[in-house]
Image (cartoon, rainbow, N blue to C red):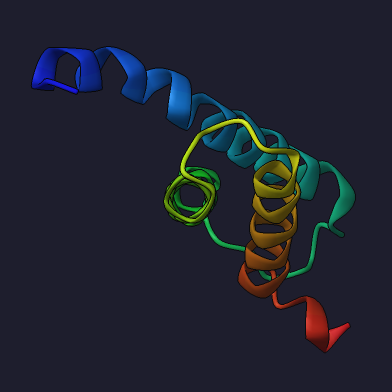
Length: 92
């Protein structure tokens, strides 16, 4: 795969990570109590996106192709766990 093809396929690879990061950060804003400590909205999205992109990259490396349901399951679990850690969910 040449550089141009990689740049064309990269947004499609990372789109699920961005979508899950946005939805989880928005859901955390709605579901968390107002007095609970939480990071800024953009910080949550950025950190969740980085974790999601790493999981998708690991899934691509492990399976040799994109789009496996196991990778998407790992994406959701990893981003949800990351958001739980960011919101200090263990202190409830």
